[in-house]
Image (tube, rainbow, N blue to C red):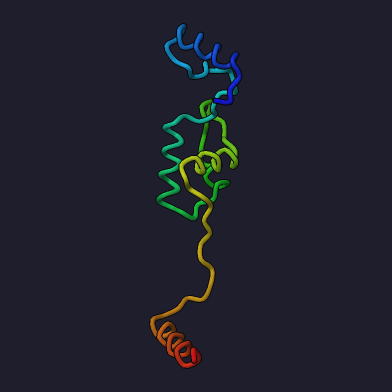
Length: 110
């Protein structure tokens, strides 16, 4: 199995004591937002895909009623699979413009 014998021994001891081989919870910095707040933030960004993380962070308060950082919002959104979006900035094409572009492309294709 390409694992050291002591590793197997420790895992076996842990399984006998706790009936699981998963790691114990460790101490660490507590999260500044609750899961409910994170879900609300994701919902807001799904409704308005062009909302920036910094604008969203200015509206959000954390557990201790403090503002959260834009990086925190970005991390929470990325764990939900949402990435940054920018609104399309370019020429507004009417149906007539599209038709004329298609005709031009067909003429010059050959």
